[in-house]
Length: 221
Image: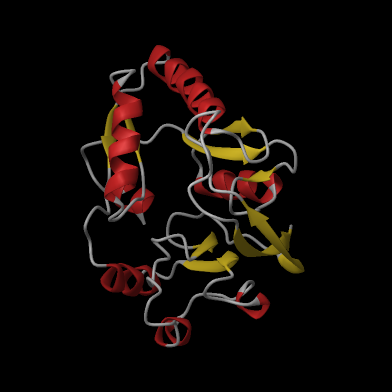
């Protein structure tokens, strides 16, 4: 939705799409999506794409070093802004802004503070289609991943779950919609459960909380 709004606006031109990828599994970080499907997606959108390769469960130090390297390259190529789809996570926005300011890059948040119930309704009205690829086990079980978001899905979400998954309750893969030249075909594959530690901000720091579990659904091109 953030990309859709940017492409339909007149203020900015989108010239590159960037996604972080777990280099060990060759999958999109946290989402678990195969890189092949990521590049099929960006090809159908028609905008050049690049990836940021990260190790499995990187420390904050490693993450920030890699991001500084990437933003330095973007600045050298003439980029002036970076856009994100965040809606209401204040701490994450502050963190992004602080990091980008080091390279004098400005942040854009096309969906900022918009009502998520209204957003997901508009998303469906525009005929976007997306499938759940990752879900927090605190809220969902194995059967939830692989589900396509529709009105029935929204109506049956737990009350404490944001309809856009803005608090990290779930992540999705968008495979069709008005920004795509063609829909992306896939098959639902294996479903697996994994646990992760909260990232450390410093090498000598202690994790802020216990492990968090996630269900993943492998999408096969």
